[in-house]
Length: 137
Image (tube, rainbow, N blue to C red; front, side, top):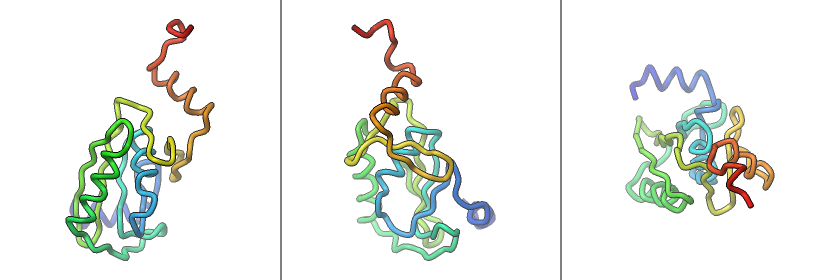
């Protein structure tokens, strides 16, 4: 990612496919939400208002993020990119939806990640065509 593209994203702000996070807190929610929706990018080291605070990018941090993705069910494959002092997590849209993390199932609604209720999970599975009505008992 070049500086011009980064500046444009920071100016546009968060949305359905972009999330800014100052730290790695609740990253698994965001990763699962993007995978369950259209995919997206998480910018670590950026405030909600688009201000670059930066983050210490280390191999340990990268490993922790990869571990979070691997602990999702089913497992997710994310790609990491460093741009200046920002770590960008690329989360592709999954073909194996729905995914869950340790605290449940999430989806992306606008610029927010929302936890799914039981009814929403059932509807989501049917909407994805993973379970046909005729196959139910």
